Image (cartoon, rainbow, N blue to C red; front, side, top):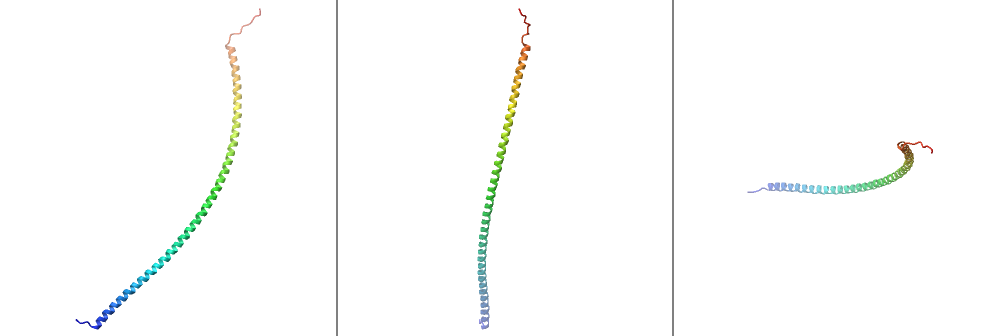
Length: 141
């Protein structure tokens, strides 16, 4: 079998064209991978930077919030302490007034019981006189 030069040229041309296409496609894939890798690295760097900035902002925000809450807590503690002192003073005054009133009431009750005891003593004497021996008329001799 004889092969003509045109046929060999055509086969070599097709093979070289296919090989060129494959090499071009491989180069394009390699170049695209490199670009994607570069894009991925840039995006990773941007995300890391954004994450660091966000963390720093959250940290500053948290510190400010903690400082505000701490000062608020101190103010509220001072207010409650002042309120508690005022309420304690009021309760002490009310307790002194109530003690004085109870003391006065107790003295009045004691006086009433003393009068009642005296009155009961007088009633006992009157009852004893009524129940006792009949009085006799004493005649002089």
